[in-house]
Length: 137
Image (cartoon, rainbow, N blue to C red; front, side):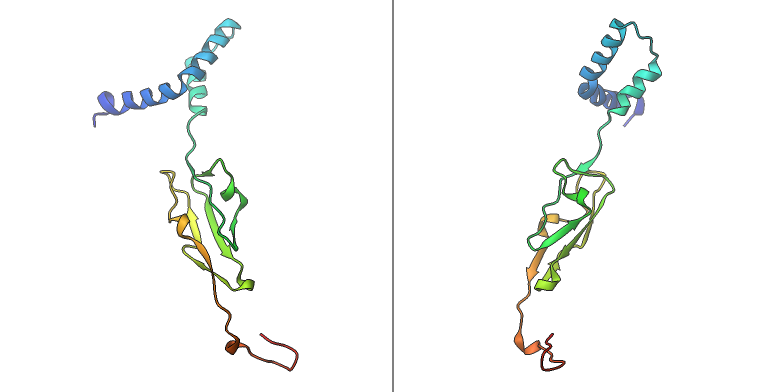
């Protein structure tokens, strides 16, 4: 794709279609108030509102946890954030799926987070080990 004839016009169209109301409000309010500004100030203002890539918040699996807490924020998780899953092992739950996922540049997770579960493992009495008459493991 030709940069001058294709990419740049599409880039600026996408940029200004989303940001035009904000830019116009800024420019007109600045003119009305008699504030002088230059093109560099306007461009900085436009790009300071650029979109942040986010992945959807992670649903905590039943009998498990997700950390850090920022992975559960409803507004989404920032690009390059790593999230970790753990299960309540003391109650015989074991993680199935990836223990770590990363938020990718395209706004998706590196692994399918909906497939991460904490599966209950059946307790089998024949695996008890007695160390003394009062202690069991």
